[in-house]
Length: 192
Image (cartoon, rainbow, N blue to C red; front, side):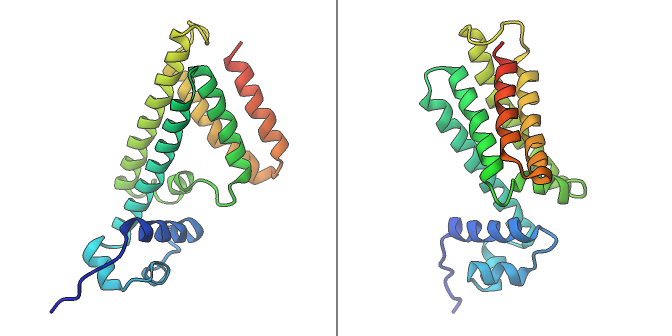
């Protein structure tokens, strides 16, 4: 009689994500994963699949959590501009406070160049985040909170690229004051 597989998939995805985050995709072995998830190898293969399938689930879970968090921040504010400013300031704080960095950025540099499925997943999610930011910026423009001559999509792309640059700057300089100043400069430059 086959043994019934009993585990909380969300919990094991979280545990696996932490291993990938710490060791990277290539540095993570199946043994690392089964040890961290505290399940046997056959349960992993039978329910989730191989290491690559598990990694895709981890990245998807990570990205979805980020979307939910951003959507909640947007929903809390009556003003689109206020929501945008809060997102910018929160991202600056996250850059400084996050010890592990961004799993998405790590994935871009480690795996995306060689893995089309991962690249497509990141591209799709990047487009989705950009659309969310574009809609927010367009609402701020429509409400008269931002300059009506701005291109909402281009501004969203600019802001998202700036976020990535902040992480690079912080990794190199380890200076939280620079990141705070850059975030305030970004806010000032888009609200003139």
